[in-house]
Length: 126
Image (cartoon, rainbow, N blue to C red):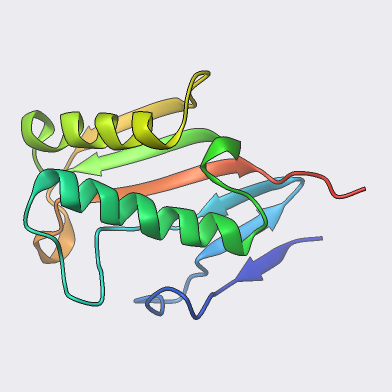
């Protein structure tokens, strides 16, 4: 059975999509940027931290966490600036083995410097 999740713990979707879809034991997240109640943090490390915080809120709504991520997609506006911050933040939240990852540099909407989306294993509850 497919479950579509929109959690009140995150800003509402900016279009016709869910925050997370769970199907076949996997959770697929939408892309999450570094938005906080105060806006977007100024530093690359703060931006990476906030984006991972939002991703973790989405994952938690599906009963999983960063340790369950099997595939991470990273979109950044500047590889040289943002990728080291994203790598450091991921390393601080999870030890090896690390998920597979795709990294793309892109012009992101609204001047957002980083967007993360993930595919995660949803732990079985027996």
